[in-house]
View (cartoon, rainbow, N blue to C red):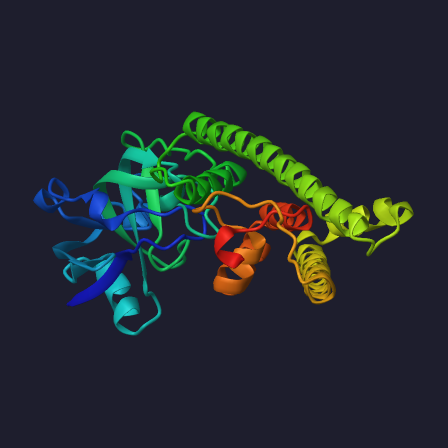
Length: 334
């Protein structure tokens, strides 16, 4: 009579540890593939003495993470036949394996949820037993030597969680997943220093920009006051508004200046025309070199360029207007 039993999987068992099926060495076991009842090798009851072996394992096969044993019972032995009958009728279904531990591991990636003890990564199979009640359907009983039980070390769950967090942090920092704590700290320090340096540079640039904006604003406001568009007593208020919105105030003030200067230029032209009509002579204002651009020349021959100067370089535009008000004229504008 033969039956197939799953004797091990890589699940966490009732005792809160697990065994890797691929690490079970059963080569020696298959040379003497005994199957016992409840791992009993001595102190049998008198009537069962000599019946420790109830069968033999004909084959061990691996199916994924499962280790499956094909067991044949010794039906020539009364006790073994009794156990075989209970298995046949479904009263006994469980098995357990006895093994010598060779290697264990506490690596976080080998620890599953609910696991409290380290993972057995390598062991040597000693025997397989039929059991009425086991730790679970695939319980493994461990041993060191012939009968001495081995105690597995407890897994430090907190440390395992920390290691998992370290790996997540390492990957986020573009380091290898197995980077140690020192490497993580060094990378964090480097990033912190880079951020502090960057913050200092940004603060310096912001200060420079603020100073330049304030200087530009002061020049525009002074020009507005000079043109009589704003009382000198409101200079501080207007400068505060400019600092709060440099771009918006620059557009407003530049337009006020341009409109006022254009009006002044027009008024100046009217005065010149009036003088010519009344006296029959035209005044001879100061002029510039032949190739130099002046307010009157640009206004007459290239108003588009004059507009661009007004928007892009208010200071230059103001100087051109000031020179014009002082009598500077281009020869070709006469």
